[in-house]
Amino acid sequence: MFRFFSNFARKAFEFVRKFMKFRTEISIPSWPRPIDHRARIFSVGSCFADRISERLRRAKFHITSNLSGVLYNPSSIADALSGWFAEGLPELRAADVIIVTFGTAWVWELDGRVVANCERRPAHLFTRRRLSVAEIVERFSSLLSNELSSQQVVFTLSPVRHLGGDAGCGFTDNSLSKAVLRVAIGELAERFPGVTYFPAYEIVNDDLRDYRFYGPDLVHPSVEAVDYIWEKFSEAALSPSARALLPEIEAILRATEHRPFSPDGEEYIRFRETMSTRVRDLAAHHPELDLRAEIEFFG
Image (cartoon, rainbow, N blue to C red):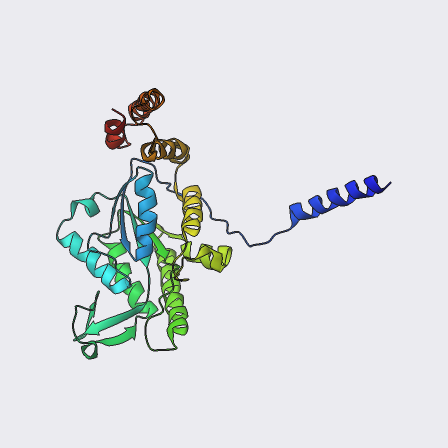
């Protein structure tokens, strides 16, 4: 009898646990224009843009990111994009997808001009202010109607908190800044059908929502958080064929990172031969992948 009730209690607990939810997991619809390995991607914006760019580059996508360094505010990002188009930058002109990551709406101005960096000049020469939604929308509406009109543009909002500014006002300034940026992106997405928003900010702050998913500085997302964001990005943004290639690409990359105890041993020699065949076979079936470094590594 005791065993009967024990088994019943265990099964009842497992049934309840199956339907218990301990977090609000975000659901992201698949993009109408998914990305495959033939696409050329250009990424610009905050340091978070570099994190996603690293994942795309590791997955053998063709991507160019932050050519002039990290840019945080929309005004500086717009200036950079406009300048690169005037210069005829080939990586930007050839891009099929442009990922723009806003970090903060706060800017520093020198003589009425927004500067991307401090320019190593005395702080009293600069004026700090917050960009308005209207300013951001107007500036990027012009770009989306002209230079960026033929390209797929993806906006993201960095989940990294920007806590600079006057003492004691970091969190309130950051909240207001992120709200301005999110509303501006929302208006741009409503105006331009080709604009897509990827909710990196919501993934970290509403889905994960725990300091376990931050690095030691408690500001930047941890490796685990970036892994999760990449997983969500892959599900929503990549084509089924591109996603199918990810495990094989990652297995090959991990093989190149493997450090054997006996590099001249027969076992490792056979391993290299097997991997060489595997890489060459993948390259032959998918010429859009740049596997030259891996082919050279395995010989």
